Length: 501
Image 1 (tube, rainbow, N blue to C red):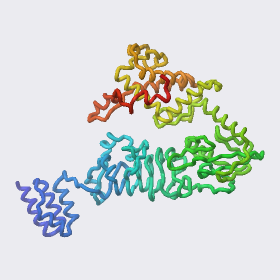
Image 2: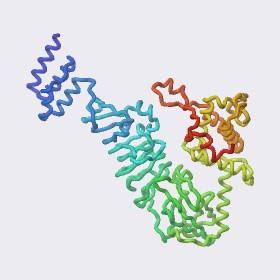
Image 3: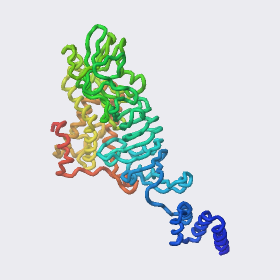
Image 4: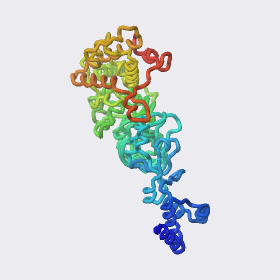
């Protein structure tokens, strides 16, 4: 054809006049005719024409996808210079000629649709704005809600905005956004967000600072103002009020990499009590001349006279009666509150707790409520929900049977399966029947009771999808039923510590 002849003539002319540019145009002509580069063309690159040859190859073959490590990786609004192979394989990076041309380097872009299809928990990586020098997975098993393969994302670089849910290490910096179920172990100078924006996870105090700007307290030193987060582990905070009464706070666990919860005087002091806003975080501070309290742990109404950090050997002058009073107060405060904390969406009270309307002298009721709160916090409760679903799939639960407390799940449907002997089924149904009786039916607010009835019903009756190749099968299949004789999945084995058959 005439246009092929013209292109050939143009190639010859530009090759002699423009050198490298001519070779690039020649590549375009070869692409139109469906030709490929020859061995002699390869020799051109070896003779110092690498960039021009690379461009020409891409122009000659629109389907060309270079392999190997890119010079830059793009993940949503974030970028990384290096991405480890282990996480690269699940982010589905693809060569992007447009970004490569714009940036003047070899660029690969993560395929968000493919990546989140198999690992939706990595969405935070696509939403965050950051410039990473390296992204990978932790070498040792370490689980978090934003992790994968039993590990979590290892990040080095600068995080600008968005939710961070990995492990920030090395010479890193976070100057915006929040950390949710993430861990910060970089230098103190790199932590530039507010303390209350570290919602959950951990913070390493190995460099002597908490949240980047509060220096750890020194032993045998007095302070005018001190946050309980500044007290190192295995120290004692000695507080004297304006009535010369002494109060002792023994710090058995402080803020650290494993978690932000503290343990003081044998009690867990949840970080959730202080991470809502600046005023909320201020409650961690003890100030001379002001009252100080942590519900269930310490109450100083007369104002603080002095603050001093002592070594763990310090015994103090606080009387046993004061300690017993604090313990009793803690028991009373916690018993009438549904103050669970779980990552399961919709279960944790947004205000921190819901109140029960119960008799605090009813020790049996308080023990039952405590058992269920512990099960929810540990995750056991939700494992039982999964098992309940499986028994429904197997036809072993088809109505409320012998447990009318479960009629809210199966309105006006008693079912028939209950007529057969099934100890595993009965144990599980009794567990959730008790949960309604002891927990749901005792909320002070009827609206809260209705909310958790509906929440539990939806959880039990919802479909548990399994990984499949099509969306249709993904939404129609449920979790596989337990195999008889599988001890690791035995209902009796899981429930034996909490359910009486």
